[in-house]
Amino acid sequence: MALDYGRLMATKREGDRFRYTDRETMLYALGVGMGRDPLNEDELPYVFEKSALKTVPSMASVLARVPLLKDCGYDYSKVLHGEQRLTLHRPLPQEGELVADSRVTEAYDKGAGKGAVIYTETKVRLADGTPLFTQHSTTFARGDGGFGGPAGSGPAPHALPERKPDQTVTLETRKDQALLYRLNGDRNPLHADPALAKKVGFPAPILHGLCTYGTACRAILQSVAKYDHTKIAGFDVRFSSPVYPGESIATDLWVDGKTVSFRCRVPERDVVVINNGRCVLA
Image (cartoon, rainbow, N blue to C red; front, side, top):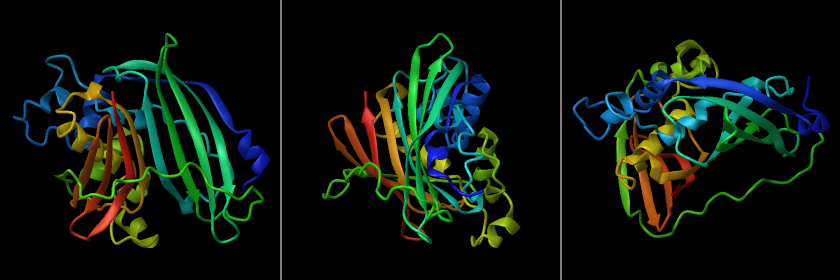
């Protein structure tokens, strides 16, 4: 089944319900590298419930996994995650019951052999109706160009300042990090199966893009936000290249008032893995 523009634009789901506990909150924090030093008293509140448990803002990306595009007709084997944008209406609670409404907002046809770009939106509220966060995601369907949709492009990416970064935060990933992070819900075997990774062109399983996203959030929490999770109100990125577990992620930061621009690099390969990043401070 191929993509159909009219059917795609009518795709939506309402009232999907999710529940998470402090277990999922701590597991996510561990999955993006919090608590590597168990004596680090700044990170311990994210992975230990002794006092009020803190939440990593980027955890929103795993709390409401709505299978919106599951049966849309694209070639799943050729799909890439292009962008992730998050607006937090209030800090994430350490546990909660959530209700999500999601829809396709835009779809563009890049032409035969050039792929399709699909934009989705998910609005999430607490069970009592209180708005919690809004999430936008961009999917690049490499094998589905020429389906008859309009040409065009979505929002322009955030422009990074032209000056040198104000600071750079380098964080290591573990060789087993993808195996840990996948327990947050994304069990795509590409992140665990060496044979499958080689079959699709990678020398080894790759780290989840959203784990790199969470690592960038951790870098800003550690530096600009001084481990105050309530200071982050928005977090947008454009994915540009995969990370292999065990590599370092260097996050270059530019701070301009309440806007923190950033990009992430893997120094070992001199490659940018996240670009056009924007963090909005509360």
